[in-house]
Image (cartoon, rainbow, N blue to C red; front, side):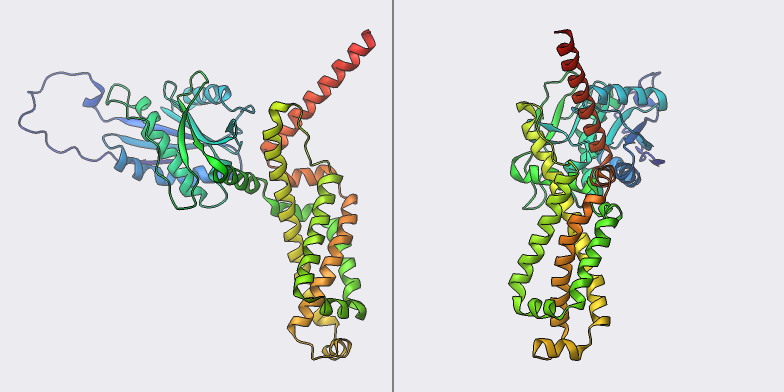
Length: 405
């Protein structure tokens, strides 16, 4: 995909200009600069295509004096857990392959410096930058990605493309947006070839990264993988619909107790899914504790949201079934009062909670591989597979050492 905006007219030169003379400087000819957005498959590719359509107009206004061409390409981008040296190698290789002046990698790999989430970083010498989509959060992703790419171009990467045309700009810090926006700061990089990182500070920054990781996991994808638990949950909910004792219990429980029962049912199924499918990760070293806590939090929130979606779907189905199956006269006779929508909702809520608990038991019949594939983003699946390979190699090494001894 390519987007361009023509270079604005420079107008007539002032009379004070020196007489025309032969010159071979780049400024005497139209300057065309090509920006390549190299994106991971999935959401990053979709966002990159949207941002590519916006950038030429914005760049013409903010960085005038040349024509900006924006192209996109889909990865997958080969990055390690740090995302630094592979970033430079991948970016430089794509520059040579596509003839791009600047490469901005858009990845769904979450990245941090210590405990601080990293939004972006760049190497101005190579003309390569990187934006981490999870650090953009879960909402307004197009606007935030556009702002992050513009920040890279205005404070470093554009100077690589315009080297020799104008002095570099100071590395300013982009302004905060909104009262609840996390503090953003630029921090120095200890890695060769990387000028600086744009980081999110404080608890709000870590919460934004967590929200972005959950968004990348796409918890709604759990529903197709939970077909067996859904069938077990539907059977349990049907039991609640057909037994009048459940009707009376649901009505006398009251809204507060029903809400608590629903929360406990969601917690029970979420805990069972995490434990039974081996989704909880244990730190392999003290250095990785903070990282493992972050990934476990993202996994837990993803599973809980997936179960909440399942609960909402089952509640809608159970409510519709209750309205069809239970005659108002029978429900009113059992409750000792007229049966209105609130009574049917209470019955459906209690039956759904019972069904979710039954579904937790039925989830043991679901393949762990299917649950993991649905609960994890592509990057998270790659990371876990790499860690499993490292564990296997370590176990083989220990076994070989024992045999040698």
